[in-house]
Image 1 (tube, rainbow, N blue to C red):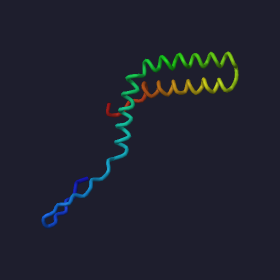
Image 2: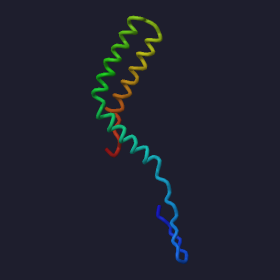
Image 3: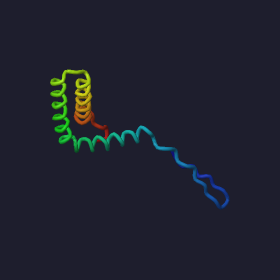
Image 4: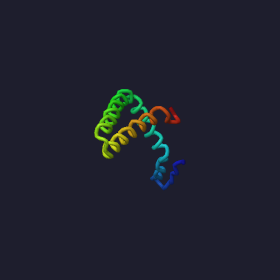
Length: 93
């Protein structure tokens, strides 16, 4: 959108520009977060992999629903991180 300048005798007033596109902001935020997560994901995925194995061992040892849900929650975070870094790529990257 172009700026509209209204000329008055001796004074120039500029109309405020329209706010930026929210989808462009979201895209740049996703791009930056993807780069940061992709850079630190290998050690985080190792740590989360050991954590998921430990939680699964706890579930097998105690055999109750609370430990099963905890293991499922930890595995969901691990799977979401893997999906986000491997399959999701920002458009402008």
